[in-house]
Image: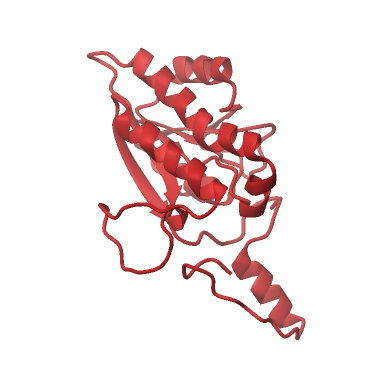
Length: 206
């Protein structure tokens, strides 16, 4: 089985690469914008891919024809999404449309890819829970709006698909380009700093 991961330089992407590359039944293609930031480059193929560029997506997907695509790439900085709305929409919604369109064009009787999209519980307002899959979304930020739009694109596509809504993604990866809330709290506590954490809307928004 050929599995292609987008956003493989990110936190979740790296974890998936290291998890899947040891599976002998999987032929793994890791993709991200720019150079590979993973220290261990064995057991998989790395391909530079800008998912906001339709021609680039078309070229890479046609080359490998992956059986499963796990789309982890996204602009996840909530504050930046508010000030850079065009980039946020391009990265979080348009890029998903590019991938879906290319895969639909390649789909035939012998090739039926499965598109797995990583979304977020930010599409809900956090006023109540636990939630079911049928819960009505109520996004409160532009980031959430872009992620909800991506879900709509996936749901409407003609592919096999699945959507996973993450709550809080944290951890340590190779050549980290940014921190995350858990590491930030850990670092400040280790330095003896007093933290005032305000819970806003949902349990993961700090």
